[in-house]
Length: 318
Image 1 (cartoon, helix red, strand yellow):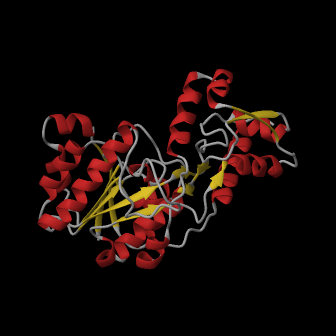
Image 2 (cartoon, helix red, strand yellow; image 1 turned 120 degrees about the horizontal axis):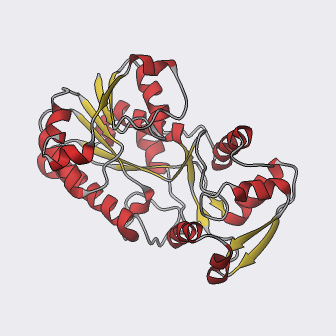
Image 3 (cartoon, rainbow, N blue to C red; image 1 turned 180 degrees about the horizontal axis):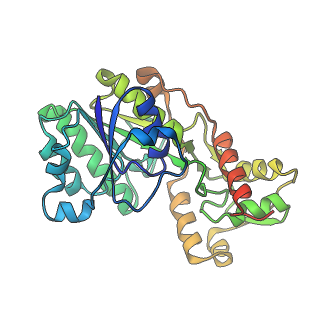
């Protein structure tokens, strides 16, 4: 099958592309040409790379038609962030593709009532990113019901993989948090460290995209969480990281408003966004039942792999 992946050289594409190639699919990866995959793999030798600037092409009204002209049987859109962008692509592809997969986010949920959160929970998104992604999800699944345009949405949690900094126990992306835990130094966490975050290895997100294509009759018209089997509290997460380096976590806790004075504005804003969405705890029962999704990594296993790579590359100093 010929599959076009829009934005296929990022976190998930680094793992998804080799999976698809090894399954025998023909791939065209559309990219701005500004990024290479986070890790090399021989599968990329057989992939056609096409450089397109999505924003410029959409402004000219030509992006959708250029994707259609590639004659894909399936399209996987990893980088759609506005409803207008989704609409332009769907209108161009209507009646032309058999499969359409959109990479969304678990943050379409926003405020939650019951945990773990199921995919059918009411959408109460928080912030511009969640609001836009929720609008795209509603549009795509609505198109499946109304017009027969077959689409499905994958909703990842906090994506982890070798080559970038994962969401840390303070709820931001500063690698120094891992370094301080690894050195046995004091780390201050916001509130009581009881907020919950839910990671997923990028390869497991790739697995779920594969499973959706394989079990398409069960997938189209649906959304599926792509997360590890269990979420983490910030305190438990910090204690586990310290233990990897033979340390006992030296933790201090401050109310958020006092805590934010101890970090940069960027880190404070990132942490607040994650605390606001807590508890980030999502069910994978639906994906397991309908798509046979079986994550290879727990949250801590995925993070451990990433943190060890950070230490080996010198991003964090122990």
